[in-house]
Image (cartoon, rainbow, N blue to C red; front, side, top):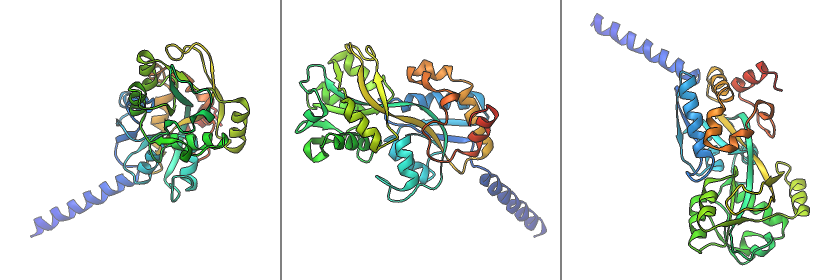
Length: 316
């Protein structure tokens, strides 16, 4: 009996110790919420997972998801540890507005990454010349409840349109591309780093054109929704695209659940910014990621671990 009591006491002490360890930030097996396989988040998420594996004592796995808005919900439910999102969606999440019924309270920023370009993609032979011409057309406005859907709603609004004015479909990037390829869709809103793989693949087969936004509409959009910025998609970004395209962008950012420890996020941030070359090899958009712009466009608190790294590097 004495031996049994001793073993029981040891077991209880070990259990308490393990719980205590969990409170310090949780597992070293991290899950990164990204987006669909045809977008930019998923391949870059895989690259960041590899950087974490190679340069820290943590393991990481990139998980395909419905992207920005879903990722905020996955952070809220603590199903993932890190996530990609748009700066506008992160702002909605912490405030509990738009697609969020209540604030996401465990959300903290790691860094702003690169511009997320709003691309209105058309078949190369399309007769559509303006957003106004989308009225009555078959248009993908992004996955239901996604950041793309919010972007589409706001841009249509500036042109005096709503989803009710379209034959709106809510599709992923890959499905949108396939339907344009098959002649079953007239246009698709895609918000992602350009070049986007789904658009590149489409341009190489059927051919595409990207719709210009009017200068006055761009300024009206930015005045009403300040998280947008002017963006130009340079000629040659996609096969057959011979002219620059004027549009808008939001920022992509990497966020963490607040339960991760300061040390964990410090090491993740350090590993990311000191090994950017591997990400550039995956997607040219990663060339925009830099320490100098790491805190731009962020409206939510930085995770203490990220803040510590930026402070060391003299970034405010």
